[in-house]
Image (cartoon, rainbow over all chains, first blue to last red; front, side, top):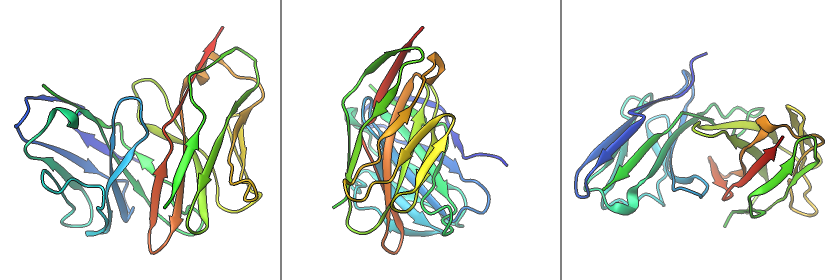
Amino acid sequence: EAGVAQSPRYKIIEKRQSVAFWCNPISGHATLYWYQQILGQGPKLLIQFQNNGVVDDSQLPKDRFSAERLKGVDSTLKIQPAKLEDSAVYLCASSLETSVLRGTQYFGPGTRLTVL
Amino acid sequence: GNSVTQMEGPVTLSEEAFLTINCTYTATGYPSLFWYVQYPGEGLQLLLKATKADDKGSNKGFEATYRKETTSFHLEKGSVQVSDSAVYFCALTVSGGSYIPTFGRGTSLIVHP
């Protein structure tokens, strides 16, 4: 079974530029998560999708961050414009959420963003 | 709200020593509890989980027991190896229409030969 795919793996941009990250979850996983992991901290949930609907985006800075999952499969996270404090690893995860595997998430390798 | 508190790291041990990493939680509702591990340069991987009180999750020699009375889910291993050096994250999800995940800050483990 293929895992969660993310691209690019690394990205360096200057502040005020735009950037987009792509995620393809495990086949059949209805729920998709985007996290921001700042160095030395735990992952912070940015947005959670159930199929193509948003379940929770309370911690997404909506003035500059946006995300979509148009066909309920892959997803894109965008930052426009980027700030220095956006430097972090952006993790995508997916889960099946049956009663047995309740809440178990499978993570992609992440995209390391550096904003100069 | 929901929160997870882990012991501060780094935890530094010699090979074959006993490991405990403490994790306590607060949750509105009945959580499922998880330990994830992040090896250097890699993404997070599920290590073990427990979905109800008194359940014991185990994997690769690691164990953790869901203690509802003390709201804890401490990670233990009887004999650590150098290859266990990583960052360990305690996490919970609570069902409330969806499984909203909350992670701790992570505890770095360094094992010396």
